[in-house]
Length: 203
Image (cartoon, rainbow, N blue to C red; front, side, top):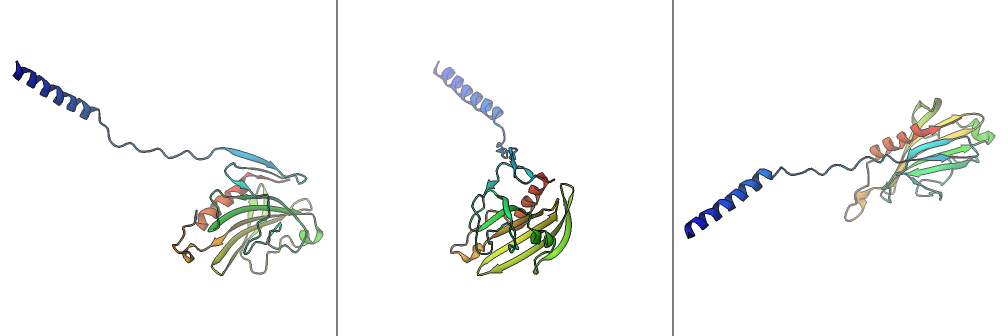
């Protein structure tokens, strides 16, 4: 009787082991989080401008005057104008920040000089935004471990100068001890900022 009981117990254990092994699968992969599909709309009265943008972008309501940025409505701030909207990429910090800025002006001098890029601009070309031709330029600057990269867009539409500036700036992480990693690369940030232009509606 004892031998039969032991044999039965062994078979049960082996059978359980075989059954568990048959049910075991390979390691599961954690699915990547879905891309953010939420969007938001901005109506920038009194100007006839609208923007449809990713809701993850942070709206900046206080002018960001930093090492390079003057806090004005555009890079060349020697004429009156209004800052209509400034959006920052999520993750922007003191190491690297990326901002999309839209400004406008009805000032006569601003309109007259709207398509004239800053003296130190380079890589000049044209781009189409919502069916309008914009003059574009790029700027690079660095100093005291700080850096700034800008892509500017300028157009005169219905007696209004529109200025779009894509700004990536910050501090080089290697100057810290220990070194700090930026939240994103400058190239990736510029690509994300350029995509915001696709949601712009102009008169």
